[in-house]
Length: 155
Image (cartoon, rainbow, N blue to C red; front, side, top):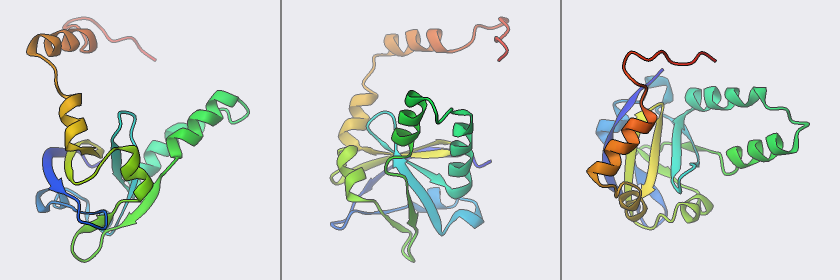
């Protein structure tokens, strides 16, 4: 599985196209450099996946009970806006207009690459999301990180 890393400042062109930075493009597996999947993220951002990573994400939904209303709602919301986006010869992707509107992306963009995904943020929204004092960050770490020597609960 690909593990992306990095933060990249970019700009959209007038048609809503985004150039994938060369340092990020090098991290894409060779079989994933022609087509990617973009979708809404949970935190007012967009998320870009390789086709294989998208399939792995949607496979996690196979345990949902589509006879259950909440499961169906989640399935629809999770997949709402999912679009295959080809990478053109100039290493650009065209981001669908309704996704740009959802994420409030106008011109200045931050790509935040981690794990199997690349988040696409409006620079303004991204900076707001990360505006946290060092004390708040420390408290957050204490809350979410496992305690040393304490065994994690098994699922």
